[in-house]
Image (cartoon, rainbow, N blue to C red; front, side):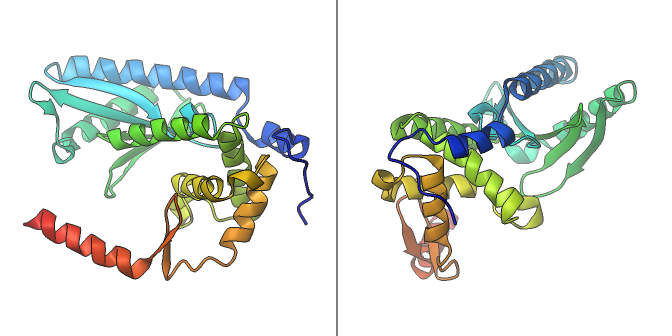
Length: 257
């Protein structure tokens, strides 16, 4: 049974858990240094192989949001542009091949870089490990950076001493280590899905949540009986799956026309 807490954003029980599983100063510094090395290397590749293209490299997800767990990866995306604007994603496949080749060349002389491979999915991903830290590299995922900024704004709006971010860390650790439902690579929930679920909780039960433990308790109570087959969750509340499917079909039809 989850213990009750007082009406305060100070909750030493969950703060102790967050201190163990959440970001530490050293872990954040290590990830920033790794990202800086990868960013410089990618810029070098573009200068030598694609002088007519411009490349911006940025992090998104839990690392810049400072909600990563101890074994979380670093999500990196490249936005590639030419004189006419942002290059279409389907035209970036040769760049993926060039990046993999260059990383493999560097890895041959640097044992700290391992596991370089590519996953062909809806969004192609280059995966590797740098000093045992997992790295995911994608191209043209600028919407992910927009999502990161949205989550930062949510944290500011929610207030209560960063309740949103602290709740993300606590609930992600519960989902990963206790209930084993976190990890999209295994068919489970992705981090962004959990963040949407937490925003829903704070949107609808804000006055009941004073600490991450309050949010976790409400999270479990709300979703233990949620009908995922008949309803879809938004940050404002559930909507019927049938109405969403009908609306999606209408929008798709309009786009095709």
